[in-house]
Length: 247
Ligand code: 6PG
View 1 (tube, helix red, strand yellow):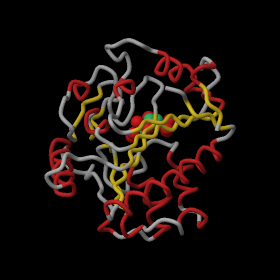
View 2: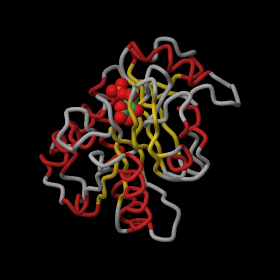
View 3: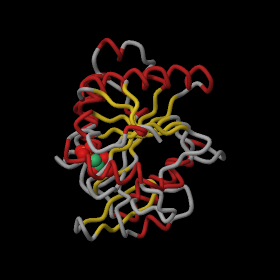
């Protein structure tokens, strides 16, 4: 799996925004709507900023775009740690995306209830078909986690495409997260990795051939969907040349 390398995070973000525009147009043309699950953390902010820019935003039929999240913290929607709040502030409110197109994980509820309600929401949205998102954005944690699939946590053993509450002792918190099978059912998955602090884990994840998936992010292998790693140069410094493709 080669990583696509960008000199700066702005260039990565512009590429991600262009990918969103293209995938949205293709999905809406084929199926009348575009379903995307956003990631949390801090990296998405740079992508939301680009996507909210007129240069990209005007090329998206936002009325046919349905926004979900691949994970959420167990906090209210206005909490500083809320992944929803990040997207609302940086993307959804500036663009005036309709409430009916925004499918928030109810982090303010008891975790098991929030997970069950979101799982039901996915099934209502996708109907009888297995939930298959057109696009899922993911980040990579320094411990190799993605979404809220943390090393050593129960959600890693889930074999069904679903939404679960996942206790993460390393955080001292519970998170709501997509399982790996749900992520792997997507038509396209894009990882965004920036910053020198991620260089080691990125090398470990992309070079690791341990069939036992040493890191949760190694479990992300969409089929027949596509997988892309969008990486800034400062996060790619430890990658072997054969895993590098320059944007
Ligand atoms: C979250 C994210 C999490 C994130 C990684 C990387 O809710 O925090 O889903 O998986 O993507 O921790 O975060 P950064 O991109 O901010 O480094």
